[in-house]
Image (cartoon, rainbow, N blue to C red; front, side, top):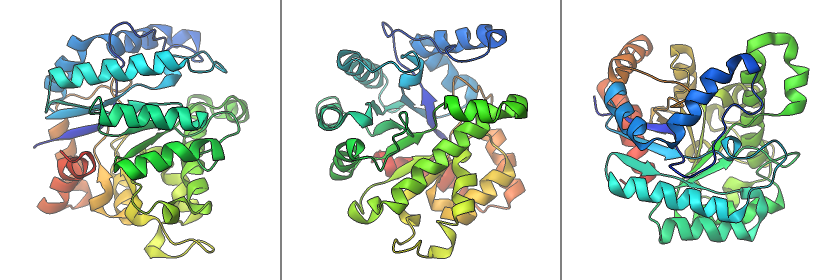
Length: 308
């Protein structure tokens, strides 16, 4: 099976990475391993063979670069994008890169996205679902989303940690982190819907993780093309990835947006998969998918988004 993994993190050599920030001390060894893989090109390339994927779409999360509350240095952002462009150019076809920007910094970030796409050849943009109290509907984020729409590149809207929700959900133990990230990812997309961003920017394609499914279903914002208040459903603008690789989540994603708007995603190197084609085949069997839908989710939808 030809598989494109849309949800992968990588920063490249020379980028200061510490993925253990904010995580329990007992997990430091695991997150230190993640940090190493985020900067080792050989680990990234080896992972393609281990997972059995045709290519990976890589991005660098500022969460792994910045301390909580720290502002992104513009030079660091440029270095990240230059690094991702260099590695993807060295391994054309095997790797596709997304630009990293702090979308909540106004025109500065829109200009960097434009540079990353037009000059560096990156295929989309990685945007964090929130920054403090700001969600994607904030005026500060509007220039970056407009730039993505005008450039015709997809936005990967990624969940982020939230200190307030972490405290609220601490009673749920190990599930609290995923629950808080789910809430943020779903809220980010719902904020875009209610702000009318998909009507203002009809060419804007947004990819969210499977963690956003709860928010989408609670809001029923994608159900059968219904209108949400005065706003139409953004079904045609939203893609959901397969993070978690669970048949219930995949079936829900397909029912919400259609098989033509679901992409394969693993969250490497936080999650490492071996023989992903076999894993996907079993997942598709459980969901009763035909050959055409399997092809869409495994690679065709990602190729369409990336113009690859």
